[in-house]
Amino acid sequence: MNFAHVNSTYRKPAEFEPHARSWMIWPHRPDLYGGRLAAMQHEFIAVVRAIAQFEPVTVVAHPNYSDIARQALRGIVTITSLPVDDFWMRDCGPSFLSGSDGGLAGVSWRFNAWGEKHAPWDQDDALARQVIEMEGGKVRESWLCCEGGSFALDGEGTLIVTETSILNPNRNPGVNKALAESELKAMLGVEKVIWLPGDPMDIETDGHIDGLCAFVKPGAVLFGANPDPSDPHTRILNENIACLRKQTDARGRSFEILPLDEAVDVEADSEIFCSSYINFYLVNGGVIVPGYGTRADEAAARTIAAAFPERKTVQVQVRAIAAGGGAIHCITQEQPTTISQQA
Image 1 (cartoon, one colour):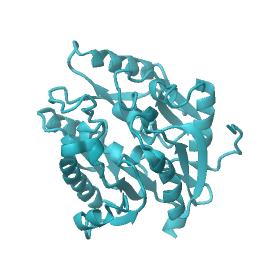
Image 2: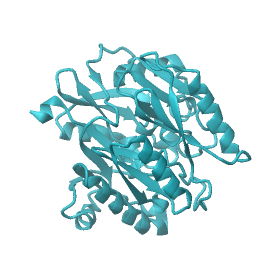
Image 3: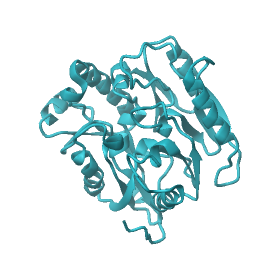
């Protein structure tokens, strides 16, 4: 490993900053998703349509399935044919950066399918570099095994991560907090890294932050909550919230924490079902909110709409996708608008 880095002139903008486009991957793995795949594709199309109301969308499709994707999404998005293993663009895609010179760059993290859980993953591991190069950006290779869903940032120097994910030996054996923190700062252009304990009950992502909390603006986060005190997950959420309450951000501000109840009444279709409404996605002028077909959907949409009054809230049902372990944030990746793109 080479741990030396020149001083970064790049930073990762916050998700609530302007986007040039969104990136997604067409779901195509019958060996992983079986009889659920058709429903996942149907929901995927609905998410694409929702995002396309607000900004351009590029969908990466495996060469064997690119014609199917083009037919399904004709006239809505741009289709790019690249070899991929799965469809969780948040985690295997690039973390796009904007440069102080107005240029575009991106981080290509190491990716091993959340701790070697779903083989193969070599094509997903190579995807970030290809996408960055396609967009004419500078590739910044990282030695750290890290997924895009494992961190949240405010665009003003603050990064939030979880110990259960970043420091998990199934990703980064032998890597301590100081070493990981140094790499995260160098790659993302942040000043302060806040470590939350994470979620040991999450057997898929090992406690990604995008199932726990999301920035509304600098100094304010929506945080997952569970109204059932008997649920073991309630204790985990409360521990993470308590940890964040003790912290200040890179500007010295305490955090305003806005609770957002999970879909506790959902009948999970799998042991890795994503029931977190935190897994929403911010787009230009809008917020795309997951729905799980429960009574909690409406309340979650109201809470998120109140947090983002200047944005249009669009809720999309993603129950089949959620059974695969993620929701809308997990299948999307934002590309920021840069000065060079505006010229």
